[in-house]
Amino acid sequence: MAVSRLQTDPTTLSKLGPDLISDLKANLWPIDCQSCGARLGRWRTSALEVQAAEDGFATASLHHPRCRPPAWLDQPLSVSGSRASLSWRAGCMLLPPGDVPIFLVNPSYEYALLRQVDGKEWRIATLDPFVSLGFARDFPSQSVPPVPALAAMIDGDRISVAVRHEGAVMHSWHNIPIAPEISTVVREWEHIMVAVTTLLDVRKPIPLDLLRTLIGARKVALGPARLTSVRFSEHAQALKPGDFAETPSAFRT
Ligand SMILES: [Zn+2]
Image (cartoon, rainbow, N blue to C red; front, top):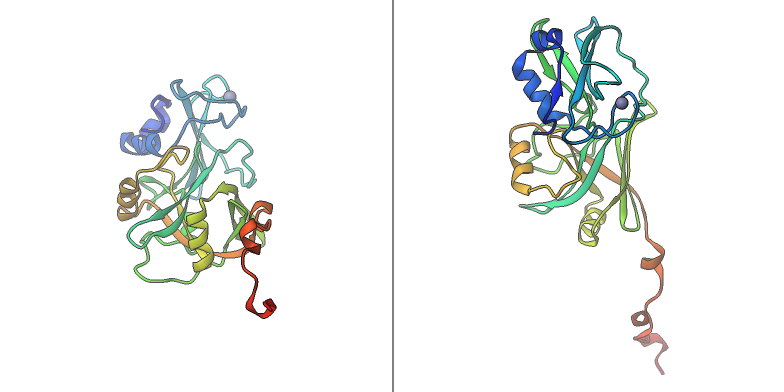
């Protein structure tokens, strides 16, 4: 479970219900307080603050209890896209079978988007904006065109992925280490599969079976990102002794 200790107020508990609170505990991770930006601490208690708008959307976020006591607030959502303290983490892997190159990202450790279904039950909707941009909930059984909102850039032994919407950069997950064997496949295929989930702590090694299970349960948003630029590191560009080992036949006498 991601958040082991979560303080909730009675209003939030009655509006969301124990099942959704339990879902939130699995989808939220206590890294940084969304009020002061300081560490929350893995074993300390975090406070859950929910801001609910009238249109059936709400946000849930983690705070130090001293910064924000647990609360349900009926107020318009702040739509300032920048959540300075929001943590994200990403990593690369090859997913068998087929060794599909994956850029796995948890874009939102301490914050979840909630949506009310038919004016009644609430559910977690953090991945919905990605689905709106063209991500799928199912792993494609065949090659699908890249998601236009996505772009991947390789710079030496690092990869970055940007998500754009209407000219604005929604997410920029940058400078993620990529192993040479994965980088080679991405350059060959000219795309990488971006896999978005809030159910995994990408700071740790991810068991591939667990990732496959979450994909099978449609809990991961998937979209191929076109590789738009490749820069080789200075190390890779430097001539090596072997580069001079053979004299081209045209120059032989
Ligand atoms: Zn704080």
